[in-house]
Image 1: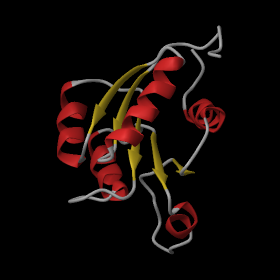
Image 2: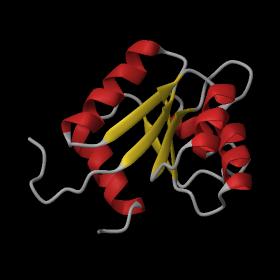
Image 3: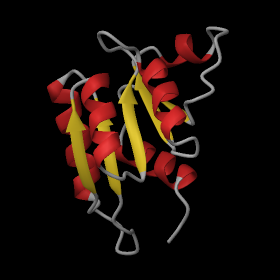
Image 4: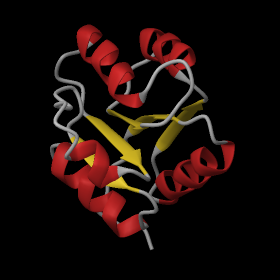
Length: 127
């Protein structure tokens, strides 16, 4: 059940898997947030350029541009913009030795609504 004290935020969700993207959209909308879903890096950069988002959630494993590369591109535009990357390879990604300096938090897939809420609370200041 959504929290009655939760404030509405605007999120950009980037995932090439429509089922995953739709599930994430539903989770966020359940808590009263506004969500724009795109299927890849090019669409994400276009959406990011034309609209303001409180936070971006993106998949690591996408064609053309990996999530960490997209995070770097987004942080070049807006250095303080919070980014959550989700992946089925969370342990491998976080221990690979290559730093994810542009990613603020990594969530392993699958994750539950409560895990997502905790991640958002960690990165977004209270209103």
